[in-house]
Image 1 (cartoon, rainbow, N blue to C red):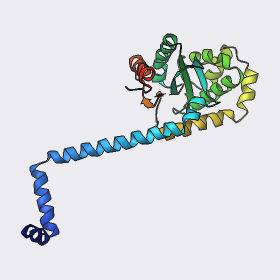
Image 2 (image 1 turned 90 degrees about the horizontal axis):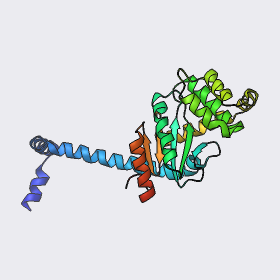
Image 3 (image 1 turned 135 degrees about the horizontal axis):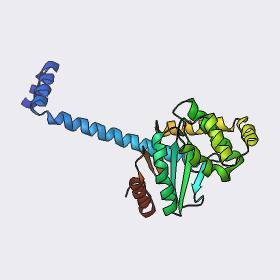
Length: 233
């Protein structure tokens, strides 16, 4: 009863002083609380991202507007968001080619995600047109433009496309439609929901991977996806 009375006798100032003194004597509690807060926030973000992946699975993996390299019927899939002016995307291209060569069951989905200015948007528009009128030539076009030196823009993209054997007249006709705009907007909306802000970014199984993580990490995630059904076992 005495304890109850003593607690009732404490005013706000007394309680604040007790808490303050305790925290000053045990400052590690603050660090523990911040770590726990960070852990909970990360768990919430991951749960939200998994929900987005689930809700967006059809447009993410099966959009009629996407480009597929490797095995279209592959049982494991990597989705790459890229920009033709992204230096890291250029360096990561060799990793993707190697992964396709070494994994005959790999399906690679490419998402045009132009985030580096008007030239990138123009290059993406040409790329969408190439995929529309000559999808069998997209791979050659993609490699030529992505690995070219200098700024990717309308001029360089058209040169890469015609160099790959695509008719300029067909390209112009395709670019006169709203397909390119709709394709890019679809990717922007998807990237926004996934929290993507840069390129390259990948989706492997149930995991979003940001940045040019390299061949070894992508290989490890593919192995885990094959063995465990998730990008991390």
